Image (tube, rainbow, N blue to C red; front, side, top):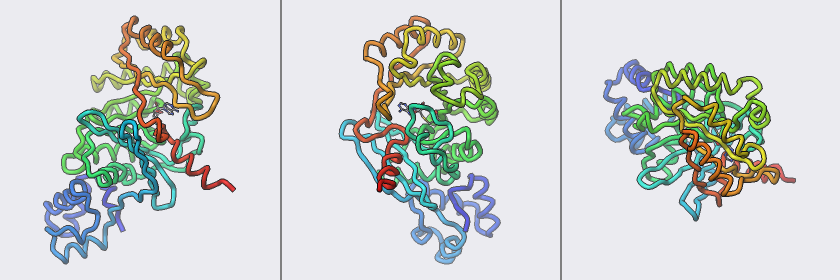
Length: 345
Ligand code: SAH
């Protein structure tokens, strides 16, 4: 049985033609799935009974099974815990901004990178998500909430560039007019920074937003926060970012999780401005969401001072507003909690 959510548009059309059906049947099916969130051929009433039965034997259209859902009383942020076909679990989050809904989706079960402040890394790495599992997160949230998602950020669990093929294919599917229909400039990929993959992405001809999780202005400090930095230095990452910009012309977002006493010194802000000079960037300052007692947010004054230093040095920055702090919306927290409950004697 083939998984319909694994197909690109062109692949699906080929498949449909090879089965002896008319080309427009592909569009009809996609309209049911992506627009109406119907994942059972029986309900696709503009197909003949014979065709429905025939297609049902060949394709499955698996939406995700909801295990838990939490809605923030503060800002409506909604967090979903899904169970996959093999029993593994992943999270997705919906964020409500005035006039738009953003989905934050996962690309791996767990994560191999193990940034010290991240809950996902603590639960280890299990496997990559398939294209279908990435796409199904968006469809399943839309179905669940009966709302259309306008923006997608690849900022959930996992490192998207370590699951490159499936992630890029999912972007094409979510972007395609007859499929996810999400504008390419409304899709953002956040990465810890794998230089060769950033270069490859620059050559895909996709005009997505790129966000780099930098978190430190020197390799000395970054080695401690983001262990993979020992393999890919800040210089190599910024070189790749420069290439990405030369290809796409896009401004790149730099994410910087601020942790008291670790990377929030005034000297860190100055150094950060220095290494980013000449790049078309925008810095997103994110007060850490503490996953254990050793990590603390900087004071409000320090946050503002950090931002001011960047602006004074010509680097535009914004302090990210916290969302869903009452529902453990930070990356991996909900899944981690479930595992703790499951493994408790
Ligand atoms: N692996 C990718 C995408 C997933 S993480 C990446 O590293 O970019 C998405 C963002 O959430 C990253 O910038 C990450 O550093 C940040 N993040 C993870 N845990 C966090 C926490 N406890 N508090 C604040 N931000 C966190």
